[in-house]
Length: 56
Image (tube, rainbow, N blue to C red; front, top):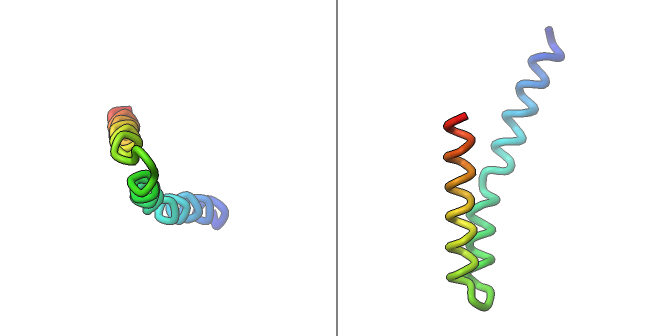
């Protein structure tokens, strides 16, 4: 019983820890040469991935 709760909390904590990564990635890409193109591609891919995961 306790191990299943620990597993659920670990997954939730991992999701919360990773959540600012897309924002950081876009900021770093926008600061790079040709950053607008890289940032736009990353944002489109990220939105498509989140949308695909939400549909499943």
